[in-house]
Length: 557
Image 1 (tube, rainbow, N blue to C red):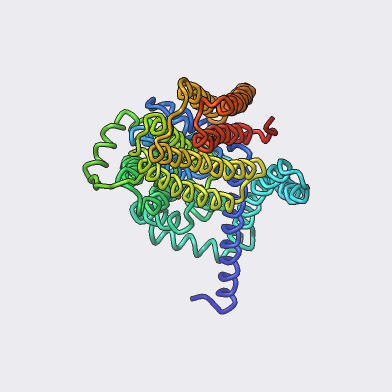
Image 2: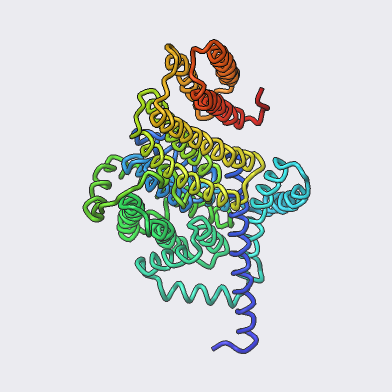
């Protein structure tokens, strides 16, 4: 039994331990946010290279996780992309495998700590805080990264300090606890529960590494807890798949299955060959100093994830097939106005969400240009069916625009960088410009109704000329897409040039129309319809050019 004084010492030590875990997780979040901001384009480029090649998928998963320092976040992001229909199950599975490799970097980094390294990290944390006072955004991001990295080691050192594990009573208590649960399945369960509670396998592995370094947790037990942590990290993905489509749930199941299979294999091996495995790790890192003890755990973590990936990578098809058998497809209806490329889970990652929302904006633009095509053809062919078609299409465009704007607002709330906020603002403006294009297309249907109602007949050759004007707008739209979606800024002058041609064509057509009126070759009742028609087409060119120039903020000529 403990005395009252000893109980107080135990409580204080546990508080120190929990404080250390808290600081560690805060540091991880700081560093993750900073890395995501600073490497946002790199992460988008990696995701843009998604293919059916399994090895590149593993590389992308490892790379993205190394950037954002969280396999759970990568898994949630992949679920979001699958739910949005951007990625297939065959493409997602290797990425999930690679994510498990990418997350081992934190463990290796944690195991390297020593007194000199700690001093550098403390200074780094202080420097990061000071850099946060600068106005320049890039300096602030670097400061946040430095502060986060420093806080990770501050947290680790709080956990391993005399106030925490340095207390003899605490050491004795933990040793007694682990002796009481010295059974592989129980240790794995501890790893699962602990990781599920703190929602970070990196943090759980960091705590285990620290405990091994402090001498309160034997290596033979730590290995099983690390195995459990790899299953516990799947909880985040499983929760994220709730409410998602069948394929997204399958991604979470594949992630869970992958880690369970790897854990079962390694559990059997270590259970049977515990002494040889421990001896092998000891021979790789001899000595009883904290660095050697910690490196044994982190290297085992790397070996586990790399080996499991190599073993299961040839069986991607089988994993996908298994997930499809367990989770059946459900019939889903998807209206045009619903988002196709964006899932709510992606909005917490601005770099990825903005790229997907840009695709949504141009899906909306495609719909608006379709309205223009239908409306223009309706005017030329005197087809009143075009009126309802355009009205129905524009109703979907308005709803889609509202959904996109809502997502843009939610992205802005997620601590976006200055450059990301500029892009979000540009996309807001793009939504407005596209909505105006759709409205102007609707105006054309009004002129069609007037044309049919009043039996308006235009001069010979006029339809061909306004047809040329419409063709220029289609050409301009293709150029705008090249500028924005392909970042081909060299094509901006081409958009300006086409827009100038459209302007000049409007002026010429209006001048010719007035001349025909004065010569009595054109009926006066045609005047309002014709002038408004060509003016509306010219305004569409203006809005398309606004979209082209929104990407770099350059003024429209």
